[in-house]
Image 1 (spheres, one colour):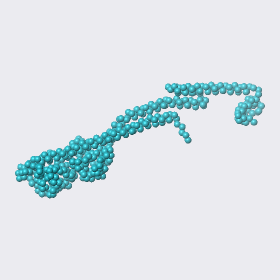
Image 2 (tube, one colour):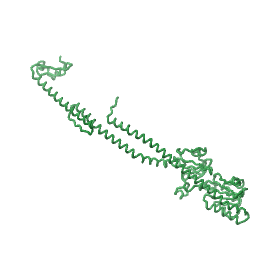
Image 3 (cartoon, helix red, strand yellow):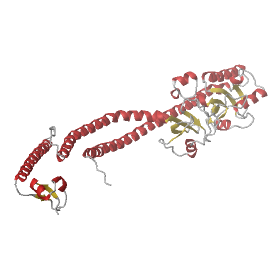
Image 4 (cartoon, one colour):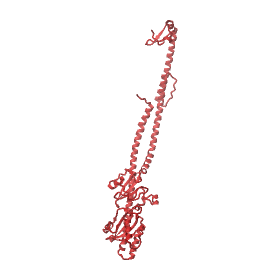
Length: 440
């Protein structure tokens, strides 16, 4: 069964297909292109920010190296007077100065090249002052720092060779000596050249973040920076994550970005994954070569995507509105063009039914006005022709009724179509009875 469609429907479909579809396709392609460029730019900026943060972390580590190296210089002269009480007091004062001025350093000690404790300052254990330490105090300090004073340590070995040593991150002791499960790492520098002793500091991982990593609210609340955390070489979380369910010491290898860090591969910046807050995030992966750690920076996907979509909407809203207005204008013009045609078609149907009282409004289009004038002329001509035929029929009827002969007319099938009164009298049939009957 064929479905007839109006010219208006055809024109509407043609306009939508020929105008709207190409515009939408081009806008979609251009929007996808702009979105990809904007996303890459935003991800590059995220990676750039992560790289800057990494440089600041490494700069902070280098600062600690410089600090401890500079502090080791006066210790060289003080250690040359082991029996001098004032020298011991000055050593202790120097160590206290380091701890009090550097919030990230919570414990500092001086070891001999044989691993014996020469001086130790640990305010958290109240081990301060110019005095000798008992075995019990040293054992407590050892448990707190996970440092074995009785066996040769890599700190002593490296320092004896004139090298600066940075140890792996580890829990700052175990209960009851831990501080909320925080991680620390050791930094040891040789005292003197050749080395006479070792200056070792215990540095809190969560305190080496530079100021730029924190928002004002985080800094005021003394909370860890949001969106940044550290993993050690085994994929273990070694820094706090504010508001997340993960704690320092948790193994993070269930996350794709952590596995990528362990494998040494490059992380694809445009790959989203479920972050530590159980939200979709984009991540940046940078290696802290100085510490053999990995810095992970996460940004929630909407924080990157929504500004891009907002920018794209501002770019495309005017062209889209312009396209819609253009289509509405074309449809309006098509309607003004097609309405006279439809009115003319209706008028022709009425003329075919014998209704010649038609009213067709003129349009602003020359060809349509010509068509309307032609339909009007056709209606008038047909009206005049029917009037003429009707008059001729009337004249013929009068003539037949007046003559003295009987007249019967039939159609081509022999069916009676007309009888005059004389024929009715002769045949005995009235015209009403004989009409449409066979002539026989």
